[in-house]
Length: 320
Image (cartoon, rainbow, N blue to C red):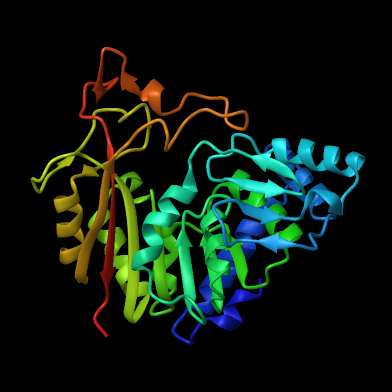
């Protein structure tokens, strides 16, 4: 755990270290649920990439000619242990990973509005396998901390970064509920695809506000309802077959949440309808995906009878 030294004194270092220690004890148990991801991580961490490239749509860790065919087979088998791959694309020693989400499309929408990342301290909340963290790394931030409570995604990122060897990128088994321990720590916070899973979204945004430095920036990307009214859907059981969905806001509603949480300079810089080009089944994600979540007779509605989702992107700032 090296990142505490990179945070300002306002971080509650003792509390963070206690939680980190408990979570590490938990994740390092000799149980199948942990070993199924920890063992592939250990196997993959023996390979070190000579060449990396995070500047393009595909995160590239190692080139094809850096390993022999037998090693590439071992790498491929261990990468498949992390299926389903939700974020990507990646190329690892010549093995192309086509993930469910075309995450480069999201990143390319975000980059025109980003502040300069060089030298910044950044949080990626719900970072998954770290696709966006690797893309941030190209812009030379001081440090990026990924908050990710999922064991699968945690070890997937650990494996990728063990091969990529980027010391400015770290992950911890923390959730958004731990943000209050990081008061005024981050210059930039990314919240990509998380807010609709929170039972109290305004409180979540207030925690992010607290964790930002004065003048800091929040980038929010969210599932959303079409329409201009300031309202949110509270689905009965699932929304688009996804459990744990609490509030699905319109863009206007999400803007109001941010305003009530204290943010200024709120900019809805992109909205678009969802489609199968953004999210779909692949050889690395065999389960149901976007088209399975829609009413087959009316693709403008979900299978539950709610309006089909769009995505909304908003930047906001904490007053300096």
